[in-house]
Image (cartoon, rainbow, N blue to C red):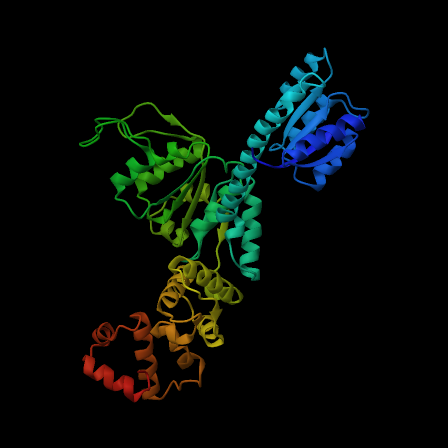
Length: 448
């Protein structure tokens, strides 16, 4: 028998104390109340797994109490105690949400096994709720790390729009976390019990993407041996996230526009439209207005998608969050590779904050993973950083003269090395000089 916390509500003190003693001997923690109002107060104060309540109470009818408990504490099970000859009250209580009922006095031997069954169900429901809470933490707004004003303002916008069914267009540079934001919006919406489907529009050819999004009928093209559901159908009732929407072929843009306007689409090879109920979130790092002017993107689709726009800040615009994110990734990867790594050196953090992060959070994540793998102790220091980040003092030191040839050459070599992530052979090729010449200049300028 699983043990838990019980609340007994009965205005007969002798019977209340007797039941409490019996159930305490079974290993349960038991608290008691003499009235419904007192019982509800205790439910507010503590997490109760099972309630045993008399159906006849001096202040609130037991049926009403059952409805109140199940409304406010759905994972709590309630067993109703009825008097002899009032079976109808027990039936009414079950219809109101009670787990079961027993007759006081005549069914004493049934109390322990009935409580055991109710406790098993209540504990299972508690586990499910805890798992759901962890899921919300994993994918909800709690997953978004940062205290800067830049990210805080964006989170507030996303939290507001999440409660609606409005289409959202997420803008921002590559690596700023657009898919994580989309997941958080879905998780905070009333669609969070349904599917969240993410698709990268740049990862497929036009023909394959059409089949993936909308599905096809058997025989509609070579290799279509059976009907296939598309991702819009898979997301029915939930949310679909279309990443890199700026890469979408114009024929598919027209089909997507129809979905936005009518929640209908045609599968490949089908003549009958398929109806869906899907919320669409989209993202791009392109300037869609420029794409419209160049004839690459439909203006009507843009205005349908951009009912609510959220622009995610680049990591260089939220310097305050770099250390927080680095600490989070350090803990994550330390656990993953089973290392005791728990300290970021001051120099390590200083150089992270000085770097412009062209790859944003994704690049920071990769840098921290690399550092955790390389370290031989519990500290991440600046020697573990990639070449281009270690060399930040060149940019942050004394000013470079715009007229001094050696200074200009030194800065140019540094920029090319940053571009090649320290790959000297590739840098020499881009500079159109020999590798030996590059090494000589690196030594001359102190860039080794």
